[in-house]
Image (cartoon, rainbow, N blue to C red; front, side, top):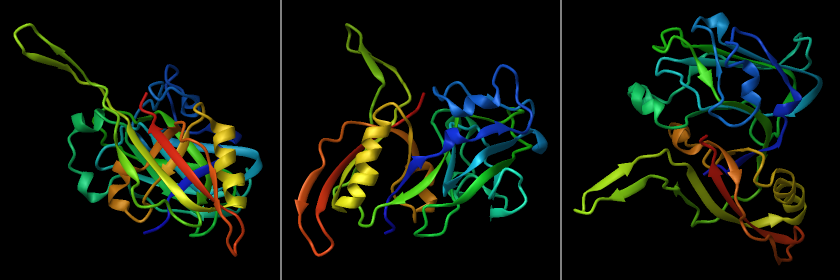
Length: 280
């Protein structure tokens, strides 16, 4: 089992967005702010209209990217390219058009796609690497047969890859926070107001080098708090389940880090974590 991945540090805000054709009411800049419901929407589904470019004068290290709360169809494909500088002369990653959805999800109904927050995710750095130098990046979306007549998404996230040296312990919890409301009539009939429900995960990394816990988890808690989103990939080798597991989330209060023991590697900390998916 490959160790869990966190998108930290984040570098999303370093890039200015451009490219494609996007409506005035739902501009491309909406991809850099919450809520997710304030989407960016293309004027049509033509390939040249559904390009997203990110550019910065100060190249960043990045290794993972995600597009969340999108309406991409079962036939959609997507391609990522990154360059080392904003001049776009030297590439640091060249992808190919690949399916947005694992095969098991291609036949999903349009209504089911509309009733959840779906995230496309791509790791573009090599295993063990936090990232490559990225001065510019481009997402090309090919979804010309989308029945909506456009593509839209709520947020784009790009970050370094943080992979814990040792993974979370057994007992990792995952599921949903239920939000639907049930009203019971006098006669006993129940009426359900069904509401979208966020995924939640909780667990603990029981063996974290102190240097790692301070520079990663401690800083993650300090810098992001509840306020700033975080990309989480719990099982990177389970690509079939990416739509079920990969999420843009907020941290919840996980409790305190603790010094666990000394070891030949140095002080070992135990680090709890708790995340709640952003759905709106």
